[in-house]
Image (tube, rainbow, N blue to C red; front, side, top):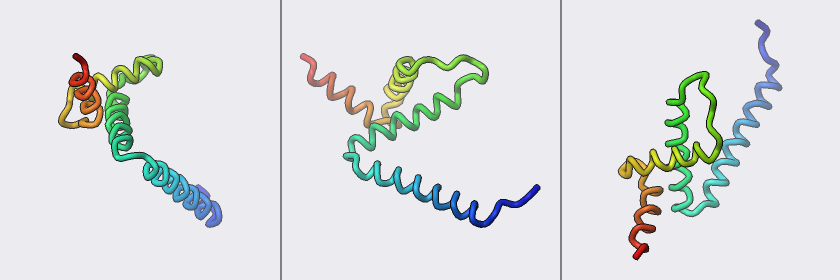
Length: 94
């Protein structure tokens, strides 16, 4: 197998660094609450995606969102940001 040219390896490393910086920059522009919500949903989305049976049709976005939020609500100690929103809504309902 042929080795990649050093210039291509350097280019790919630069692109990886640029992508990582873009993520850091975006997360830095979010409020702590927004970051926590993104974290909760992203982690649970990853977990649920890993559990999805291979070869089974993937559900539409709305179903995925509902499944992820439901799973977060079932584990309040692990996903406190999503659960804080639910708790605040319950407390403000007469």
